Image 1: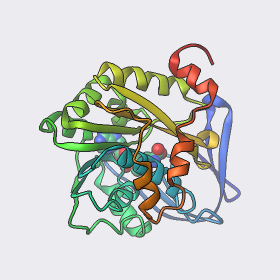
Image 2: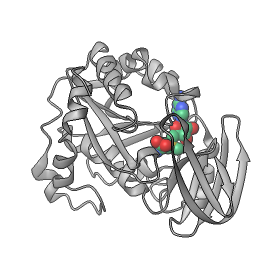
Image 3: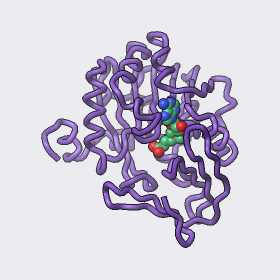
Image 4: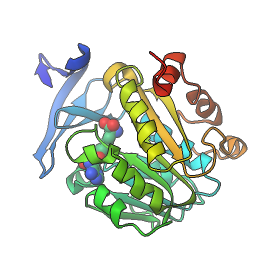
Length: 287
Ligand code: SAM
């Protein structure tokens, strides 16, 4: 990451590209035990949070990521009551989960409590569900949490993690997916952020293979725009224990009126339509 002449620039060196935001000011910085947390005010994207110099979220576009990581999975499960979020310390995913009235318990397991405390201060609207009696917070390693979970505890597990490096690397591994499989009830659904369809199709493919090896019956990815992440295009990958992930509660999604800005039953359906190059990459039949 560089700051030059008031422009924050995050380079994606392996793909020879970069993304910039015009800054107004840097408003906060803290080195937590896990990562460098920085907060900026930008000219046109509102507040920006970075972790170790990488964009995590901005006021302007985080709704797309948080809604598309949450609602497709919750409208695929027949009755999502108990939800586990691993990572997601900015609390935006938690806020979306709590929009579902059937949800009785939403457990957020974030390794770095400071991310949540900083989000509470600089992104209060994302944290508006934090005092909901259905929400529980545990500040510890999500890999450990999944390993210790009792069989069949959750209906949906959402992995809202950083990139597959450092403490998040194990969140993309077979051992972790096996624990998620075990911790899910019989109709359970796992959904994980799965990076850029354009830049990381091999990661998406390897997530499909690894989730299948861990026991999941049906696996599908969906995609959505995210202009502040590398390539401007992002994905989430869903895995079901026994039901097909392409069938979702479309009528419920249409009727729900959840106060979403990107998610609808139509964007859900559209997001599941994968471009041919990505279908081929996932099938291992070319690019
Ligand atoms: N949407 C973001 C993105 O894709 O860039 C992710 C945002 S969210 C803030 C990611 C969170 O995952 C971070 O706060 C990080 O501390 C947390 N995290 C990383 N590894 C973890 C682990 N092993 N257990 C729990 N949380 C973890």
